[in-house]
Image 1 (cartoon, rainbow, N blue to C red):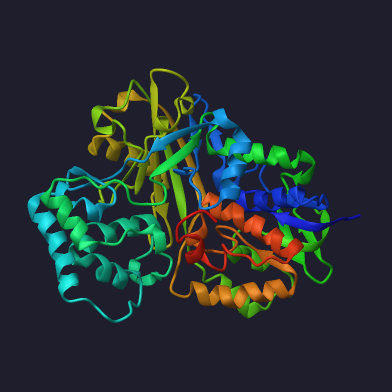
Image 2: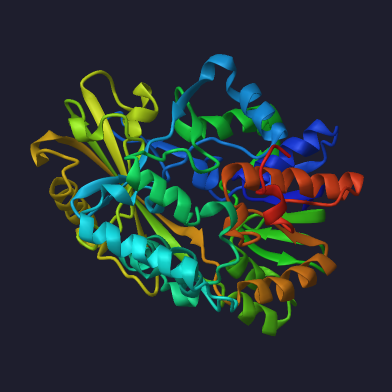
Length: 464
């Protein structure tokens, strides 16, 4: 016999937890969260390796566009549960560290490379392109000039996304990318000034204990263990009977269904969903994220002092970003005398990675880049591959979403979240959580959603 709930939520990442929390907060108890893993948190989970080092699935930090989210984070871990940090992010390029954002700090580069970058900005300023860019690569050239494009933006973005910039839309950029300001860049060069302040996360928080996953475990605890069915993978959805079929054969009836799992595979599980739209959804592109954690004895060398995370556009390394994870919290390592680096490497259909050699390549590159002094200092390694790491804003993404999402909603099936809605521009933890919250407000209170349909509005600045 199947069980019935008014609201069934698939996935217990931040979006699913946001929906579940808001339902309970609204006095609604008739819901269940189905999670295929034995833990909650999705891509925001934290793991502890056999040597006592903690590892997130990527370099998560806590900053927010929403007062509601901020209040919940405080409630989840308490006043003493957070550590605050000033962001110090850097780019390792041309054998030197350049402060982020790159375009505002090109004075750190060798003089001929600095001039190459500045000249590109000047040319764009004196001969502005008035035509609309066709893709992300066009946009990069128009906004930053050929020098910065060639030196940093093109190679770095390929390492992040795993797809050439000409195959991507530029419409996602918004607050995610600092544009080039000729006056600001020139002033920084002439007066030898650093420019660290740009960005929505120039200050961030991190949990004192338990990594990012501790936040979402706490939120799940506030919702109640009885509202979760772990180890429950969804095998199929019957929209006519309004049933979810689980891998173990159980059937769960629903009134309304919220999916937060990857849209491209989810639609294939929905019976009678138009085949043309299933094929359309499979054209959505994504990349995978490989997290390689390196636990070390001793202390970071002086080059890493104060640094939070670093970007690596050059081809000698597999990783695009390295986080000094032990800087986030002293409890991310087993105790005094240890520290840790967490690296992220993308792979995709356009950028394959040799998984067998990834750890070895990572260690060799960390030594070559001067982050690790000796392989003898390494006491622990950790590897985690997230098949779905980044939802790629491909050129046809929006057209696919405009086809697929309305058809699902006609079946009383809604899909939200980093991969449920496939919008990287609102794919951070706060965005994802609020997509769940706003979906409940839409269902229960008939309040229009903001985050998923209007990314530029919620990212425009200020707290929503």
